[in-house]
Length: 479
Image (tube, rainbow, N blue to C red; front, side, top):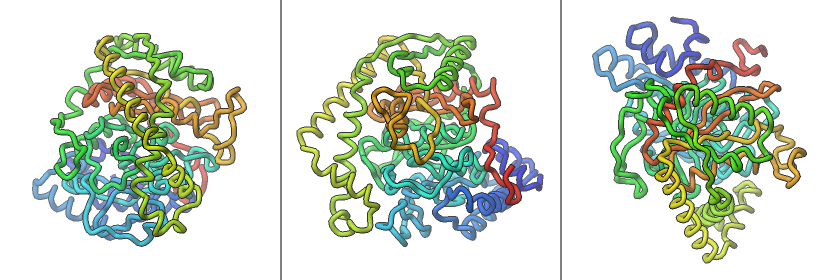
């Protein structure tokens, strides 16, 4: 298997299998990925930095270790992208901001170290919004529609995966920043349980809401990547002391017996466009046909999520940036700076009220899962597909309340961050205009394995995840 385009189209599990039977090498996978980056970067700008020589050295080491029988696991020799807010020793880490320009950490974030320990090849640093706050617009573009929003804040990770310039990637999620680019780019993204993956060495946005998680092209790959990066970290005060299971062990057991809840009034509200509504209903019907039990539920506390999350996030973000705003305020993007300064004006009483509202919401969610014996909640990941960049902050013509596309995107994702529960986005179809649609499963704390099992069962019935965007380049020409 020597064709470069064949290699980059392999999934993580396929590439891992090919490595172990001698059909390819870590160096070949790395060279193919670097070639793909050079082909696609002039158009999509997924990467902030690509340390080519370090990647080649790591690939050669992986090949030598595998040849000697030192197999570190399924990520050994696999090129992985890392979001640019994660510290990487000796590699530029700028968090999409002039404030961090030229910064090279002298240590690795835990997630970067775990990838290295698993033998993965850190192929590059993927672009993100400034400090992951989602205000400024990086130059990244989605291959599905170059003039549209590519998803934030883990934008580079999502775009690199759909463009086949990475086999997997690391993202972070404070209000949907893994799942939104996953939905927009037709890939799989998981926000794990709060504390499941260490945030040590990851620049915080809101430390009580931040999550680090895997982004991949398939559900199985996501389970493999989570298995490598999850686990307790004594350097992270928020890290959970929970055992890490083999997430692939029961992944093929199917959806039969799973109890899946849906609050139709909330998740299928009028802002959900017809194509997304139909795709979500189709997912529900198929899971039911596979033996899952669909439970209609109602959780009024869902309505608390936007105001609660914004209050907590704004105060915590402003607290972290307080000193830098005073010392380097002119280096921030003006919109990011204004948002951070606005957070300093939120009264302490409002922040405390937000924390209390979050506890009320978490308690209600816990009671719901226990009362209905639920395994998951299902919803669209987003009420609509991506929008043109020029329309991103304009009131939607189809919404009487004047909701903007950007506000719509987070309608279904905020709740999992507030609850701290795992939530997975996976492909479930396309709009009539050919734009990807994702659905979301939100599960019980530390039960990511059940989400993988349900999503894998659905994935096997479709080829959504195999479809590639029109703006992908093989030799400099559009397909």
